[in-house]
Image (cartoon, rainbow, N blue to C red; front, side, top):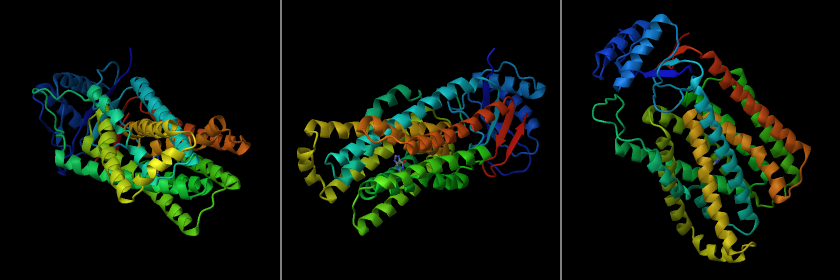
Amino acid sequence: MKPKLVSITVFQQSSASSVSISRNASSKANAKEADQVSDQFQSTSISDVTASSEANAKEADQVSDQFQSTSISDVTASSVGDREPNPHTDSSATIQLIVPGSKHFRWWLRVSLYIFFLLAGQSAAVLLGRLYFDKGGNSKWMATFVQSAGFPVVIPFLFFFTPPPPNSTATSSHKPPPISTLALLYLCFGLLLAGDNLMYSYGLLYLPVSTYSLLCATQLGFNAVFSFFLNSQKFTALILNSLFLLTISASLLAIHAGSDNTTNVSKLKYTIGFLCTLGASVTYSLYLSLIQLYFQRVIKNETFSAILNMQIYPSFVATCVCIVGLFASGEWRTLNGEMKVYQKGKVSYVMTLVWIAVTWQIASIGMLGLVFEVSSLFSNVIGTLGLPAVPILAVVFFGDKMDGVKVISLLLALWGFLSYVYQHYLDDSKCKATITRVDVNSGARIELC
Ligand SMILES: Nc1nc2[nH]cnc2c(=O)[nH]1
């Protein structure tokens, strides 16, 4: 018998201090369950409980029975989206009954897959980006354009993963946001993405690798601050240890790279590169935290299609911005000449750009998936884990020198990563039978074990 996860989402709509549970599902069973739930949370102000189908109503009964007897055995799993609730960061008002074992395998599998996408995609994209600049590429707008322009490869997946429209008998208290709100949000995310990508490209072009990597390492710190304020991220000793080790790992690599710095840029370009990379670190961290907030507050119950939408629409906006930038800056006139003098030939020039675009999309799916399933901070942790992986891969693909510092940096990053993952493992074990209520407004949590 496999234990399962059961969640009942409770949307807090009033600040009344008395317990008042009403519902928009039609079954009596749901009403009964609501009463039972209210008994469990006498001190709370819950105004609306939703169970949108007969199956959910049945499951809600089973849950309430579990509440009564506290002997948790075999409960039908519900889906509040396909997403695993995250006790560290989730701030929707959710009553969760987490029963051991089921998470768990599928959740870990999805997270592992997203980690692989992010690490593989980011490493390949950064290496190919370096190839582009090394072999004669020089256009900042083109380098920025390919970071978002690959989004059409994701579109076919939308048809596979878009959930069917809700049937007429089902009711849900979560109305999808108006199209105009979504369009405005996607526009803002797209502009943020374009700004980040452009600053990222300027940094890569104007700064020595050492300074660049050092500044990139700061994004974990910025992300920690944004996550604390925007996502109610909880910081445990293991998470702090992870952030510390990963920052040290990236910094070690950066200081070490200073020894083989050959870049010769003017003071003005250095200053521009410095400010742009710092700006990109702040922007990227803010972007990730805002995406997490968006998944929690706006999208709530959706599944993989939410990730795909978040990938496609902002990338479309960012790509449009880059096309305007390419023409407005006049850089488009240099592209033909750039292709002709590209050291590896025209086909290689085009293929390099195409694969940079594709690999950034793979990385972005991994990045968004991790924000969706875990948190923006964890997504950034994996991105930072990828930093020392790049020099090691460069040893294989570019014939760079291998040395001890690179290995130590990678080991520290792995240690930091394992520290974070261990925290999740502990949470997983601790929540063997935990009912958690997280209040939207106060962030307060009530746990009944
Ligand atoms: N600033 C910044 N932009 C990115 N775009 C994709 N990955 C990154 C990253 O790690 N930092």
